[in-house]
Image (cartoon, rainbow, N blue to C red; front, side):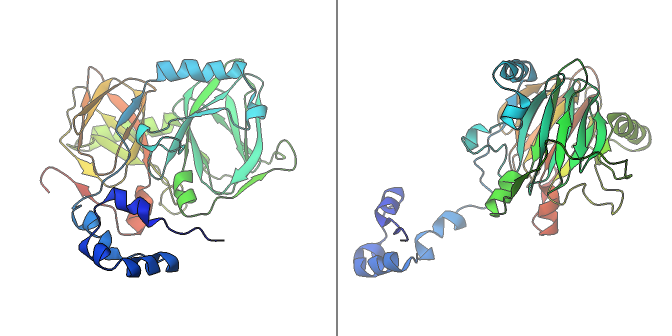
Length: 339
């Protein structure tokens, strides 16, 4: 049985129009037919010249999150948890396991000797390594060793597991597009029939964009290009096979902002999640000041005006968003100071 739309609930959200009062029988017929008049709602959209988002600017300090992440190891193993992760839940999107409207981030912990079992899912994923070195991610059986600052890709529907054969904990930032996939109603998940996928030889596919190589590229940009007034020196991770984003639904970036840098005010339609790799500074989002240091994470909502300010040394920021999706749909836009 299909549940009827409750028109009474609508009445407390907005004053009933004269038409609603004049033609109550007509509105009851609409309710029975599961129809609704746009004219009762369209004022909410015509009065909105730019995007409004429930996402709030927010900063997660790593020193606080790290203690909670490590404490979880005393409660359950990686195998028991499937993935031992603490999600970075945006306070404007509570209980949705979402950091922005379309992107998710979380801190994952893998203790020495642990293996997170093999599974796959329709959401695409990546790992941005924060702490520890020498553990691995295996994608369809192909292993890559992970070190701080590495960006490791797990494409949609690829089998993957993680293992820590070192004697120190590994912590990384997980990024997934599952809020977007959920909104599309396309969530699939499958557990591998065995604990781990059989290993395969290196296929030459690009799974790991090492920090050593990307940091070198940023240094070369700084030595050869003019510093952008809004974001310093910024590079986009791309798939060498087609020069497009490493995953169709997730765009990822690494930027260098020089010592003492003060960006001009800037905004864009993709809400961005940041992880600080090096340096200290702050970002002012509208009227909210977010003071950050190494390994901290923060989020900038859709179309929120913001500025970055860097302190006494160069700052390196990793970020990701759904920008590529917006570009393909012809929806992405930005506003720079002279626009």
